[in-house]
Length: 212
Figure 1 (cartoon, helix red, strand yellow):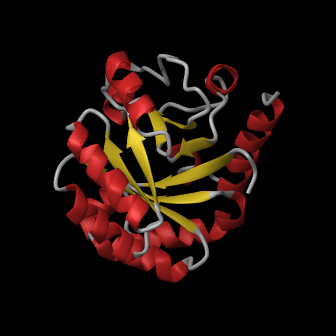
Figure 2 (cartoon, rainbow, N blue to C red):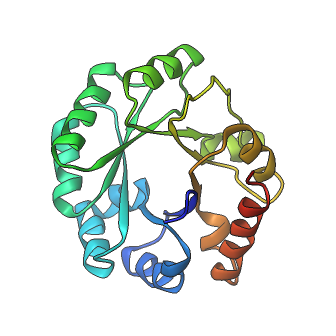
């Protein structure tokens, strides 16, 4: 896989629609995200269905774990996920339990930094060197305020970085220059595009053009 890639975020559709769309773009994306809305509406069936449909693909279950860490991690990993998300604004012990469970399962975990302070981000960065850190602007914030992606750059010291929320052709170049992210999480601007493959290729070109 390239040193940077797109993670396709799938939300607010049914499982069959999500699988059909993913089949069209599978070769053009790195990871597939089974979004929180799919998981809440359809449960672990959504993860199992994607594992059956895409047996070789990296699957991220956007669980947004904030408590009951071991149980929820085990649900996702047993269903076929390779990566789970945990909320960085939650209790530190919860993040620690997610990290332990993921390591024991030889899987990955992503810390969603939505609504975290700079102090929290520094603590998480220094405590979990093997995590993927997701700098994230919420959908509600985008819709209510018109905000696009914003982030404090605390100095990530070589950590794996994902970016999500409000990514578009205008916001991507400065994000790439500032943060050098590995993972670009993009949802509706691909899933709602008339030609999803063309939309992905446009983003891939922007990412490529702005890499050092």
